[in-house]
Length: 193
Image (cartoon, rainbow, N blue to C red; front, side, top):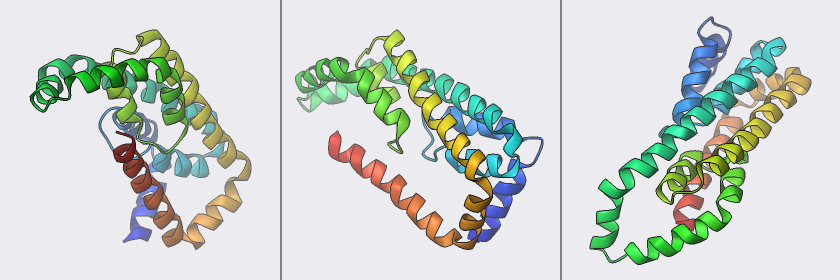
């Protein structure tokens, strides 16, 4: 099953729909979807190394647009959905303290989450909910996502064939480590929040 999924992803990466699929996954990952776009970016660059920089651009642009949606979700739905629940349980004042602290360090939170496997959607929604400066949020998102996706594309571009061989020979191990990193990111979110 894992091999079939890998083969499907590699075939998608080489198809004419690759750019659209990458843009879609990058967009929704920044606001609601749990799977990072690297899952498509890496095989796409492995499949067509000459398009590495284009794929990094698509990934970055769509991710920042998705981050804007995440910000809007936090900003527009917080008062209607989350705030009454926080107030009901007596956490309204605690959230205000959290928001003040978050806005003090928000640019760093966006940068760190944008560069790491940490679920970026949590930060995009929290940024909107705490009313982090939209300009600060966008600049930090562009910087972080650009660094991350161009670095991934660059590494795969320069070290692609041995990486592809490693992945194909150790597919189970790569999947297990990737899953552990994803679960670890969610556990970190739960621990921090």
